[in-house]
Image 1 (cartoon, rainbow over the protein chains, first blue to last red):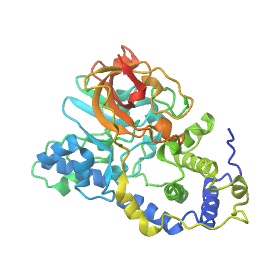
Image 2 (cartoon, helix red, strand yellow):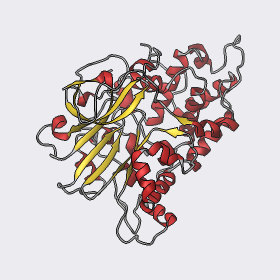
Image 3 (cartoon, rainbow over the protein chains, first blue to last red):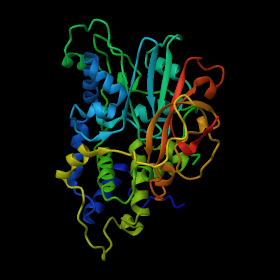
Image 4 (cartoon, each protein chain N blue to C red):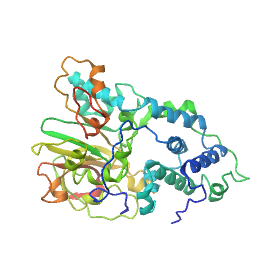
Length: 202
Length: 219
């Protein structure tokens, strides 16, 4: 198979500029649509959406039940940028069970609730080791999971997307949805961190 | 295909390197590639599975060397060329062919929000009942398709338990090659860590993999 794309300049920034210019001139893309897409993913879709889902599940038992039974519909209730249906499964951490999400084959990630994935999630080290050595991977993130706790790794091989519902930390009694959501980190919803009452670095 | 993209279980890839306060895009061109991909996908010439397969076909050494968005750029160029949206001559000159009629972009700025609001849905109605039931033992088939497939190598030949039914979904092996959506039942299958990796693995741990019916047989 032909695999030589050297027609374009080798520097990615120049190659992309040349490609965009060609596609615009051919009338295939509208530069303003590109700006709108970038703005949406930089500013409107991100882990704050998922954090809101988690906080609501902690406060509202009926919502949590709906979320665990059919996350696609439950999350649509919150009316985010993706108001339409997306295939989503929410998996719950408990004192006996810790969940971890990966995509070994590419980079599948729940965009509507977490935004675009961080580089490490898409990287070979994480994709290769999360399934064979989840405990080692979690230790690398500073999380030592007791051997009595079951680890469930979710390999996102289909269009189903997975979001971890972390455990609500002690010391957060009486907090409202906004305050709780502010504690929930992206990594806690991937499963590489726990939520801490005092907040966490990531 | 047994490509380097199928990396579950490999060793030697190095430490995981999380970055504090990571930006969504590290360079402006990364955002442009991402947006170009989404905007050209709206032309309807390919589908999500064909897009993945284009990236899987990047030669292994290049795949491992390239950054994430370099792979997206490479895959996009493959798709544009293979679907005839651009020609090699146009890529070389950077200019449309002299006789090419200028088209009208389907995705304009005002259509971005409605497109994202619509969501993406891959479940399809089928007439056949699921072959497997929750709790049933199944074996991931030992198959080595040379085209696109979503059965990771590390699971092939292993026995798992059906954990949940996701309904019937578009079958990537067919869709990626433009042979139709051919929807079939999709299952979440739990494999114990010891079944996949041997006795050194933690006794309680498990890996859940979404697998289509054609990838499974009764155990």
